Each structure stands twice: as structure tokens, then as C-alpha cells.
Length: 362
Image 1: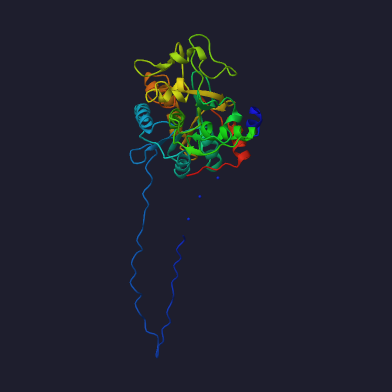
Image 2: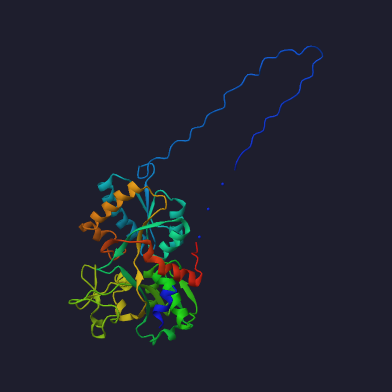
């Protein structure tokens, strides 16, 4: 697989005119003096100033892309919003737009009061379109990057990328970096043309499409497993070792998916309740090269002073236990921390977008 080639190669109102006419008067004698017509003062309209960003009248919109269950996102997002409100006194309004593209649209349409938790592809598109600016990137168990994974049935007989040619593909959303864009480039690089495609709506739904036999393969995010000793390294096999597969099951409290002492953290772990035998039924065919992690980004005209307050409060919130019940929850986005990010880190994603001429769908 020519993995590195494609990463290296790898957009918005009427003036009313009033004319006054003068009428001529005819006189037969000396012009008579006429009183000037009474005038009425033109009504003055004073536009009320916009309420300050973060006030109850103008809350900060916190947007989350719909990559996992929306109810989980809203519940966890409200925990974050409450913590930020307590730290800053600002008011926040959490929402999950209907798609990745809708999230970008909202950030560009409301440039002064939106913050968005958007993936690498979404950020590259939003920043180029209207100047959305990155603040932080996700950290997951020490990793500031993640990967795309291709999932197939463990007994499907699919062993190589070439075997995917003509097969039915379930992906989350065309705006998903790991779920759609990167796999698309992988397939193009290898001369693979999938058959029927299904937009599942989320990473979880894509995983379950393979599990339920509704698709031959699906694409989603890969986060490295946690090992009992040592750590996974890039280049190591991404899937659970064969000798541990039979042991894989959710923990008694249902919070983790364990295979012996190994904890699964990729998209399959998010369906452990609906499909406790997911590892026995669905395997990782391969993963992509590394992708820059998701972002926390700000609308292009977001007030700098308010942004500073939020950034400071987020750094503090990331150190609390409540973080793990919010965006740190593995059923949410699984961010174990945050780190400062720069716009330049997402240039490889911009190159990827240009390579395929990608534009988001509504």
C-alpha cells in the first residue's frame, strides 16, 4: 500500500433609494407667499446593540459532529458546558448538527459565537472556507494522531485490500476523515472500486452494518489498544491477537471492552452493549497512516478575550474527573486530554482535499 504517497499529496446583501420631486406653481399676479408645508420628523431607528458573546441572550454555541450517539454527545456536552459556565460565568448552548457539513455551515454562519469539536477534515474545510481557527487538538492515551480502520467479518474470507473490490461499503458520513476521506484515498491508491455504498450515519452504525451482515466492510476510527504492559507502537498489528479473541467481552459494569488484559479502544468498543461479541465477529483488515487528531476550533470572528477564558477553563477541566464523563468518555469522543494545535498541522489534510477535489455534502 502506497500509504505515504497519498498523505503527502494529500469554499456568502438592498439599498433603497428615495427620490424627492419638486412641483411647479403658476401665478397670475405677484407670487403669493405660501406657508412651508409642515414637516414631520423622520422616525429614527436605533438598532439595539448585540448582546455580549457568552451572555444569556447570546450564548456560545458548542457544536459537536455526529460521529457517535447524539444522546451521549449532548449529555456529555452539557457536563462540559456546566463546568465551563462555573469557571467563566459564560453561557453555552450544546448542539449536534445533522452532519459534518452542517457543523461547518453553522460555524461559518455564526462567526462570533461558535466553537466546534470538529475532525481534521472538517477543520481544513472550515478554515479555508471562512477562517475558522484551531485552538486545541485531541490527545488520546498519549497519542495526538489517530488512524482509519477497515473492518470486515472475521469469517468473511476478505484478507487483503484487493478483496474489497466490488464489495458493499458502509461508512459514517462523507465528511468523516477516518470514516470516508482517508479510506477513499486508500482505495484510489490501490485501484479498488467498492460496489454498493451505504452512508450509515455514525462510526458505530458502520461497525454494526458489518456485524449484522448489511455490508461487506466498513470504515471508522482506530485508536490503539491499551496493553497490560508496554504500549502499542505504530507498525504493530492493529487487531486483537488471535489467542485473545475468544476472551473478548464487556466488563461487568459495561464500561470497557476487554480481551484478557488488553482494552479495545477502536470504534468496535462503542458497540459493546449492542454486540458484546463484536471482536469475535468483526476484525480489522488494516489501518491507514496516521491522521492529525480532532480539533477544538473557534469561529473566525470569535472575541479573543472570551476565547482566552474558554481555553484556560478547558485546560483546567481536562484535569478533573468530570472530563472522563464528558468528552473523555470512550462512548463520546474519548479525548483523554488536549494539547495546543496550529493551523499548519492540518496542511497534509488540505493537500488530501485538493487531490480528490472534495467538497462537503449538506
